[in-house]
Length: 295
Image (tube, rainbow, N blue to C red):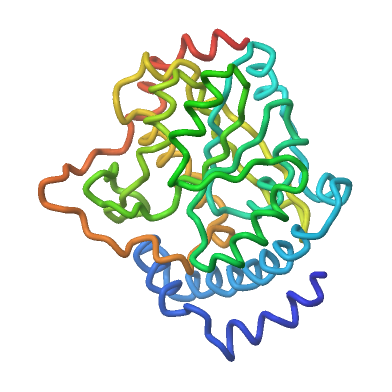
């Protein structure tokens, strides 16, 4: 499988030059402290990884559960399953970092909860229908933004414990209704939806990071972002998510989706720029009771 990715790399990077200008600009703005040679190293490593992600995404559409479990291991699923035992739904916050397709497809057999992947619908209807059918073949429900409110309301009313997977690093469609903060040295809008639903239904929010152990093999690690969202100030959840994501990306930047036009929007003048969520000391003071509840 990865032999195909190795063949694709010189075609995508050197011949097609797929979004190289976007990637190079994003890296320059995100890491102004790095010299050009270091950013070029990250750029090339990113395109190698992007080719891996492409062939893994195709593999994901046809493989069996055992194949996914060999390649995609959740090391501390008990953190999420704890809430299932309490009958509580959870929001799983992550990003387009390392492999996200395996998680979408395997969500319903990785955890006890009913797995629901929330995302943007694809533009091509036929392609979207095929990919959705393949992603959901093991029980994961796929929900797009047009009916996500009804989905939350339905499962809350019927008391079904659900794990809502949200890749919250996408560029919001409406910059006026976004949370703006400084992220990777740039003014950046974030989707407020995950915090909105967490606060509306009082759902725990869990951040998860995907580490690339070796080529084609990943480990998923969950960490509690908050247990009681109504006890936190508004924007604390999305602000903390932005902070955690920045730390994840800075640790190994080649694994994030740099060819995505993340900074294509400008902050409206009437929308405030919020500071990054306070340092870990202040966060721990606000969330201490949440951590104590699961110990």
